[in-house]
Length: 314
Image (cartoon, rainbow, N blue to C red; front, side, top):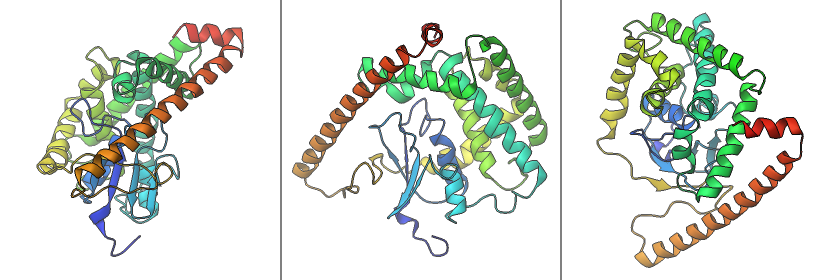
């Protein structure tokens, strides 16, 4: 899709806005900011039907779709396919890889810990499950918490040691990034990169979403130049372009629905019929999720006494 690509039908589909952010999902926000930094025109759409889908966010244009769970994520896919690449002249620099490790590895790990463990899921429930029935939302929350602990390597025996290591790495990452950034506009002097998208997303999410008691939030606020960096970029690239925001749409990937977005001139009768279909799909999804979670809980309940005890401690 390189060359004379038509940007009029570019759409980024994310989870819903929340906490004063265009999307409060920590996986979706970097993709949104990346497109804003690249000044690529696009519509923002929301998919509330699949709260635990690994495909979100995804970027679509005609028959082209870049999903979050393939080829290293949406940003890497857009770079690889020539849609927009802010890193073309930076990836060969030695400091690029070291900064990427700090942001995409250490800080992402710390944020995952805070969202699902450190703050006991206060923010996660609102971001992912607030639109679901209480019981299903709780089941999915416990499932995602269990998966997050596995990804972080957390067990009952090493939880305290892992927590200290996670926060130690986050502190070191903030210190290194603060020193590197100084009062520069971007991490690489005068040009934005995907690392700015990831880091700006991290800062905005940490400050605006995590509670004031968050350990990670307190560590970040110790570095005033990082806060100023985020405020400048937010004002220039996010708030300045929000004077005429695209209307929120309900969009679904081709694998979920074969129907495209409906034009605004649709008669009311057709729109109400479409709403009925949407609600019917939503009820089917909720029922399917409930059955899947019940099966999941049943299977996990019989694995071993150690795992059951581990789950009870959550």
